[in-house]
Image (cartoon, rainbow, N blue to C red):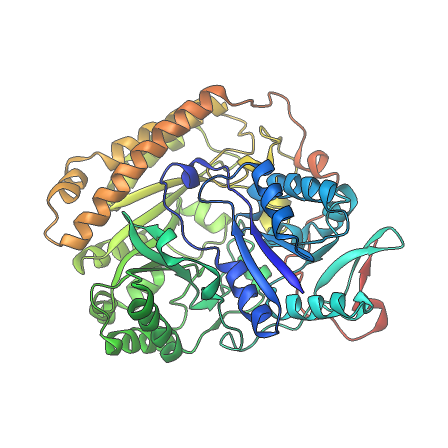
Length: 508
């Protein structure tokens, strides 16, 4: 079949302002198996240029695919755009199958199929195997009830087949690197870059995060094979930077150490590795952090989430402020940048909480800081504790963790925004932070700090301009009213069920 993989444009400021983009890993991961199955596969990445919907539609019509597969890593905030694109495509090409995947449609499949007649099929969960089986069924005009891991309309009602088996060996399906032109993708100040995964899933229980439920189990790639693939990307395509999209690649000390040793053995000059981890893992690995640096690890994002121990317990973070501070100190000792997220938007926050947070953040002394807003996605436990709260934004394009979505009883949105922006600039412009930006002795660290500062300044100013013109709800619906349900989506929605006929499928 003739297949078009379509990556919608992201509207978030953090994506638009830097003018640098990484390849859409999710679609490439599906593209490789589809190519290997003998299909004609093309990628249309509308994100880097913020391609208008009319131009996207024109290109789709010129390509004349049998099926369009739409997916985006920021699936909630990209959802309205994905639906708009689907509507335009169907207007001109009513017989083209439109298949939609990602975290948001995985959990909201009933809503999407009910509200959008332009979406034909939803892939639920990771799609490498599911997409191949689905396209084979479409090509043979087979009954879709036999394809696990999808949702579609049956007798005009949304219908989901049983969950697809979890992919145990992440090396069974290759990434379709041939679908991209590597020179079009960069990061970290125009360094040629890709995004990859060492592992999938996370064993931790943070209430605001749905990754554990989506992936169901922490798994990892063969460390030696991944290191060899990175070395090949460097040799053949001049890749300088790898961004790990894992939630927690360092979960297993043994396996992570194997990867570090394998990448060191590949002897890749000036390779940069960035990603996310937990402070606990950095403290645990204090004795092997020299291997992190030798392998090319230059920055890790860590979610300190909050400076209040009681809040950390409430959101089941599982860490502590003392470990957070120690992890930052250890990373700095090894010339590895710490990028820390500071979460706000919890229900009982007051002005005094923000006032206290500022000096506490200074004691953390992070190299870089990024504020985020707690966002009540319906498939997370955070939804249950927040469903009585009112929303101040009903535009899902702003449900991206960078915009406040929930009302905080004691502080109006404008004052929360003011606190956050002031604290951000004060933490980032403290003298010791500026000194690291301007004169850090490690050339790679200095470059990374300067790049982030330039980008962050543009994003900071852009967010202020946007907030001034934003439409906020003053008496918005509660979460229950907004979603028309008081039930949390089953967090572990893709887990296998007992093999009884009744539980094999889900139907409304």
